[in-house]
Image (cartoon, rainbow, N blue to C red):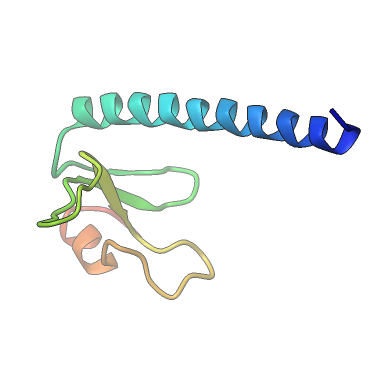
Length: 93
C-alpha cells in the first residue's frame, strides 16, 4: 500500500470513529431531552438563547425523535423559536 493509500485508510477509520462519537452524543442528548420533556422551555444563562424541546413532525420522512427550537443567536436573522413565544413563556430575551 502506498503512503497516500495508507493516509486515505487512516482518514476513513477516523471518520468512522467520529460518526460513532456523534451517534453516542445524539443518544445522550435524546436521553436528556426525554428527561426534560416535550414542550418544555429553558434558557441558556450565558447566551440568553431560549430552547424548547419539540418532536419534529414528518409524514413520509423519518425524523429524529427529539429536537429543539431556539431563539436566534447574535448575528442571525431569526431562530426557530420566536422571541415573542419565548417572552410569552416568561423569558427575558
